[in-house]
Length: 350
Image (cartoon, rainbow, N blue to C red; front, side):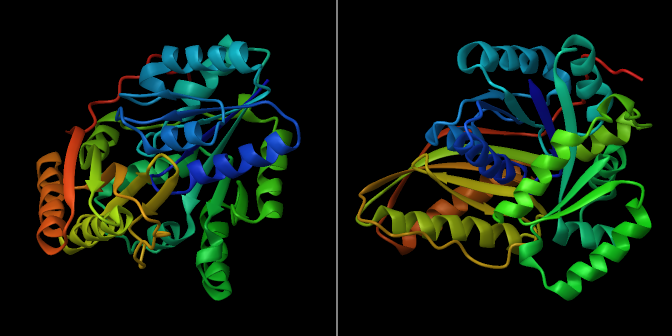
């Protein structure tokens, strides 16, 4: 069995990479399992994999390190129920210290498994971080930088969204900062690029030699606490409800930007099948394929630098705007808004 751990900041494209890789490997006849992870409990990513009939489990209400037994139980479930040969396990984007708290325990307690770790970074955010030109709080950036520091394989993702000139500049900056690491420049939607990542993590045999981080858990906890989490399920009803859903998604995004809230990620899942994502670097509105529907179920996962109270208010104001301007009814269902607690890993191995 292979267990491929993925780390990396919110919005770095880990879920999309797993989704594309799973489809590619399933077509090749391999048995795949996926484990998603989040501080919240109502997750867009798990809903997406479930809709695609990709065997998946989730670790909720905390990161892998603080819920290690849940992670291990889910690995065992995928083995027993689906005979999974390859398991992708995606850690929540605000988590770091994966080597000491997840990878080394897996190597110890599952000695028959081959374990890899790759760390994803959105090339646009990475460039800003390397140039000290990003607006996230320093404690949040501390998490981002620690994720890259502990990696041996860095996947610089979403290179299809930048020019060749910008990419060349990023490559130079990364060589200066992370020249001792394996660095992959990836467009996840390019089969050859994806294949290169899969071949790299399959061939990597250095996981057992990775060093545990030197990390200040107080700063780490402060960084997580700067981020507000909001999970919301809702229903949009009215004639042409998909159009109303598009209006609402874009209204939430624009209000978030207008308030100056730095976006870790802003994800929507429409009727369990269509995913829309925004990050701090998004510059275009969502455009849906408008089909005749009178009702749409919408799931929102919002992780931004703000407070739970502020983003709860923002969502309600966005809903009021759409209801007042257009002839739609918005029904709010499950909601959770919070800030992550202090990380308390089950294991921490030097």
